Length: 190
Ligand code: B4P
Image (cartoon, rainbow, N blue to C red):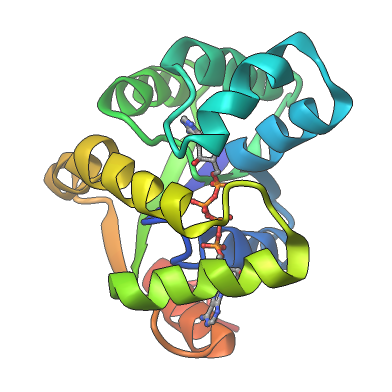
């Protein structure tokens, strides 16, 4: 049966880290809109050229672009088992995803809201900047990403609370501890 999990949370909360592990252990495909966009930037595609300045400014890439990417990915999967990492990030994206899930008969197993205090998030992202050199992991862009999160993504917390699918995860512990909380929330603990 087609199934999906959504990871929601501010930049640096651990969405990507946890989504990767969960996807590999559950045999799901991790769909990270951030990774897809960075791959376009690295390959110098038209989409990448459009997205790069937006990402470097810490802003969100327009909904129609993101929805095109997600639609194409789902269309290529006959029986999707997917972990959405960093998608949806706006109300319009969430509503479009609801329609896609319904049309393709994909069951939503849960929306995992991973959070941590802002000073910890900034510390992690600046740490990653030293290791990976991502061009949006500098203090100014990180602050802009936090503002975008508060203004455009945080409203999704109430949206998913109302549907009963939201599961709140404390992202402050060690990676293994956070992962254990996620398994418990989804009821998939071995
Ligand atoms: P993303 O790639 O999604 O980046 P992110 O929100 O910063 O989170 P990420 O998943 O990478 O980091 P994580 O918390 O795992 O987005 C980048 C940009 O792409 C956006 O700003 C936007 O421009 C664009 N974009 C993406 N999706 C979009 C959408 N749907 N709509 C519009 N625009 C979109 O980890 C951060 C660091 O913390 C890592 O170094 C990790 O090792 C560390 N860490 C994780 N867990 C930890 C723990 N428990 N303890 C200590 N460190 C930990």
